[in-house]
Length: 109
Length: 113
Image 1: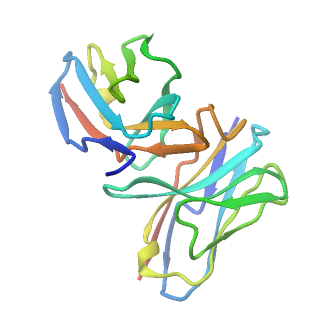
Image 2 (image 1 turned 180 degrees about the vertical axis):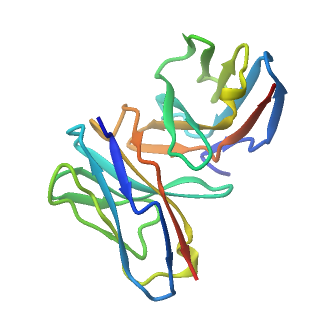
């Protein structure tokens, strides 16, 4: 079992839809949780960072962490074609950090 | 502010050749690292450095060497290229190894034939 599991998709939604992206992890020692966005042929860029259970909101993006279930989510409201990218989760703690394989998202106009 | 700069952007090597991938950052970050990204595998850590003169191995270090003589630069050397090293390589930096988001470069797309 991989330490971090992420559905690779691809996921295709119409413009304006709410998008839900998810990761599960196996190591309960992981303490901080990040989401990166990666456009085609570019490097990942940090989108959201949180280290506690619950929700963190930033504009149209909400990161949700459920440590008891070892499950994290990224919600995108009012999705735009410019949100089309691959989204990577990164989970760390206990001197380790692991990336998910990424979910490829397409938002159609 | 350039952030993390990687060169070259693309490279084709023949099996057995050696080369150096360059990485430079201008944010005075202590931590720098190299990842490779392969389809379905996610980002895997090759080598990392927590400061000038200090390097260590990551998850997949075989076939690669690094050095860190300055805070700004962290080159990755492929000693004898193999087709299994065909990948996209990313350099990343951050103020520290843990509990910080990373700033990534734009990547080097390497093909070994």
